[in-house]
Length: 160
Image (tube, rainbow, N blue to C red; front, side, top):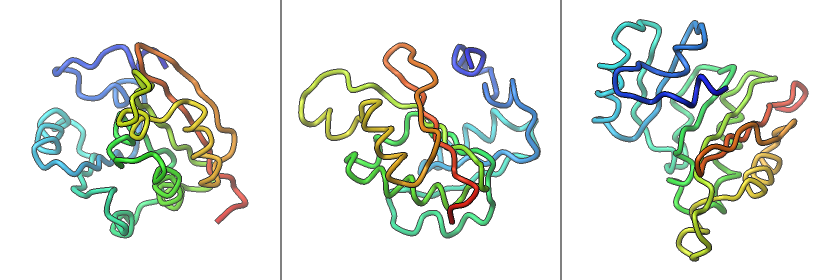
């Protein structure tokens, strides 16, 4: 896991692609400039698909046909704009996962207890509760690093 999180320089195409062999790699972002930058950085990876969309929209997941082994949310979940909506987002993500697939969430630990911060950023316990409420199993924190955490939940094999 340290290899995935330790290097994020512009010339590194993707820490995930550096350490994993993948048949398909899909990037989802609401920002066309961010996707364009990713296209340039990942030009050597023809199995990469780029999807422009906004997970704050109710039906964002309907246009994604693939069933994934893993979904990685990198410092994006707080963009839902209030953590009370996170479990609903995770239910939608769960529908995109193969049975047994994992949702891996990296996000910020709340840096202080101001209401505008605590409304956006979930604590580890709140992440665990949202993953559990969304139907994920084997929920846990796998890494704490410089104000970030990585929480993981697995889609059970026997749940739709």
